[in-house]
Length: 113
Image (cartoon, rainbow, N blue to C red; front, side, top):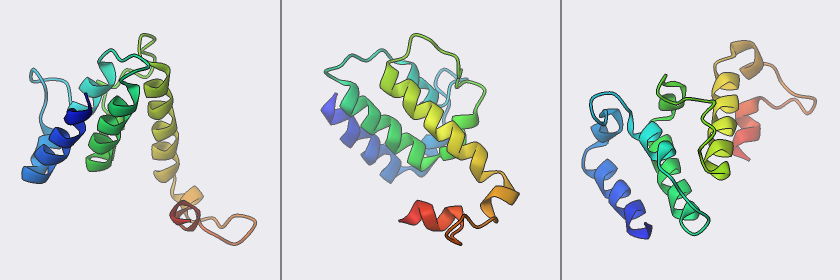
């Protein structure tokens, strides 16, 4: 599975539109990568692939194909999805994004640190 990270990087580098393709006409690459079965020996590489695909197309985390309640996913995959969904929902909240915290910093400043 280690080579797959390099392959995904290569594919995204060759054609950034790969991130929009649907597998079997319905499932975006991020959802497909999240639905595969992983074990403790290959989860590190799997998360690497999932992060690459997510970074290329973060909006895909909100796709209907990303069944949030999927119980058969590896725990680390499920945690990644939950964390990104929380961030995605926060990023869409204009009030939250423009309200300084107790230190006077906006969420963007905090994210960049």
